[in-house]
Length: 436
Image (cartoon, rainbow, N blue to C red; front, side):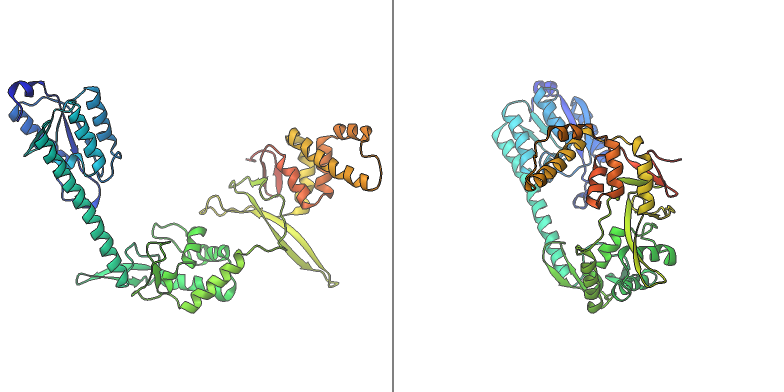
């Protein structure tokens, strides 16, 4: 115990803490801690310099901002004593406990007072403090192991220990938890799997169907995002199996009623794998990353379509349209535009576009090197100074127009990588700035 003279020189910081985690739900509230300790301070004549509080777990060291500041202020001499409800309010880990004991060893922290105990800078009381805080850490460690053991046992019984996936909801009957199919959403989700497996629907086609035909909404009342839709299609929980934790390789057979059969699930995975494979014959769309939709801000995407003429010939056309991916809930009405029309408009506005001159010069140099190598094969002079001068005199915009009209898709793409500003399209009209 402190003498009356020592107590008069002690400057206390009242520290109150309560974790937001489930393992401390029964702990006394912060307001109650402060009330009790202030009453005790008044009764014993303690000098409270400041009150500090935080809602944070003490399981890991160095993670509580208020406690870290308290340690720093004690080190600076602002306080030399701590008033708190119990030792475990200060520490439940070895790191923070070590910081407290170190301050006591350096005689910067002279006293720790709790509701029922005191700890001064002497071996016995410091040892007792370390035992009590270590006991709190041991309780945390045991609690964590028990939780993991309980989760593992639940998985082995066939129940997934997480929020029920979309299409299911939890039900408790006579104290027993159960997982049942959602009578409204489950049939629609089953139809979604069938559309992919048997009707050849892509993810975007399914999304359009859900949004327009079914008005399907998530639990939060929003349209299902495309990424979330693919997560559902790839989730084996819907055919009866689940992995927990995800990525661990630990698989369990669920006791819940499967939404679909294993055969249907495998069929969907085959379709998704096929659609995800890169196609070597896929059309190269050069303008998809350069031009944005003026209405919703999304990039353009391209599609190749084939039309059969009356004489039997088949003609291929390339169309561009808004990707409609920036705002999932916004149904953009920007119409399709043919690539030929797009190129024509690009040629018309190329003079208004700023082009990276340094990158352009590098591109021309690469083309010149290829050209001179070709001339060397023909045994012609590849060091023609007049040709080098003509290379320098080439007008950037004229060259860009030429490539747009007659170049390959790769050459068109190279030109567009040199454009320093975004381009926008609205109602099939190209602009150098957002059209109102």
